[in-house]
Image 1 (spheres, rainbow, N blue to C red):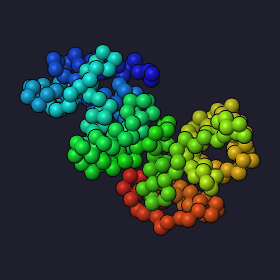
Image 2: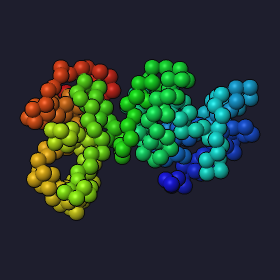
Image 3: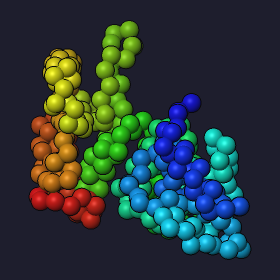
Image 4: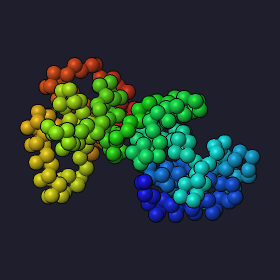
Length: 262
């Protein structure tokens, strides 16, 4: 079972103590308790039943909620699905999908459960859209962002967590995402890939092995997502065309979620 960071548990315990009887952990604080990736937030969050008095507490936002809390690590908290639904009113699409991807990766819920709840609860277009974009096998929020840049631009959705097997069927390599039929791999590299000599050497050997197996690997870095997403899309398209993939006309939906120069 996935572990819980001590700081997240202590934050959740603290918000219950100050919010009082009947309060339960919710929103960003609940997401962190479950080990999900959620944007930094200066406030702690708790919820209470709609009929209870809502106190003003410095550093704490107390919401009214009809959710029935569950117990997690001894604390009352909104369920992972309810946490996702609550955050749909606070977060943008990309951050919300990252929460969903990380909840699934931590084994807290499934993409199907999120879709079902978003549609049944009637939480609005953002919750439904984000739930439909959550995938199993996504291991980092930057992978989520990279995948959504591709999808929101109207390009074919890449498979995630591709497993490369040897002749015996054993997994010898994994690729963040890509297109298996055309052997196009797409990955995100954090700064540790450039600053660690060991990691850099391992990356070189890995790419040589993948090239020998016929794979064309395209690698994104932070600037591609936060500074020049348009240029990154152009490079992805070039690789797809190089491999004979049909490339549709790019949509502009990505521009609302990825700022920066072209």
